[in-house]
Length: 102
Image 1 (cartoon, rainbow, N blue to C red):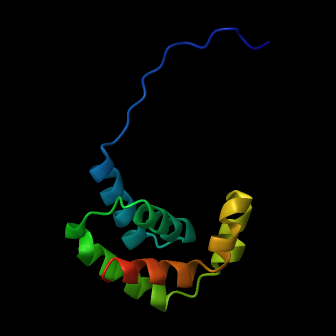
Image 2 (cartoon, one colour):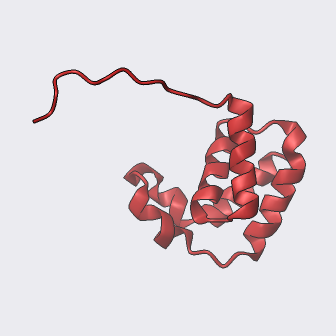
């Protein structure tokens, strides 16, 4: 039986700048498809500050060198509205990086 009331809980949220930095560090250390998608999402939303350009250059170089199959690895976990981007994430992210001067 599920109780009618949930116990109180504390929600801890990172400041936006720290969250972006953590996501970029995850991309640099792990390089999983979801990390690249996070970068694409953050770039599209204008969340990556210009002082993080060195991280973006590293991300672009690792993206170009990667052999990841983004469509296969991401599509099952994303809403259908993002499936098109996931299938061609490599090109979409390269275009987004270019828009940001990388």
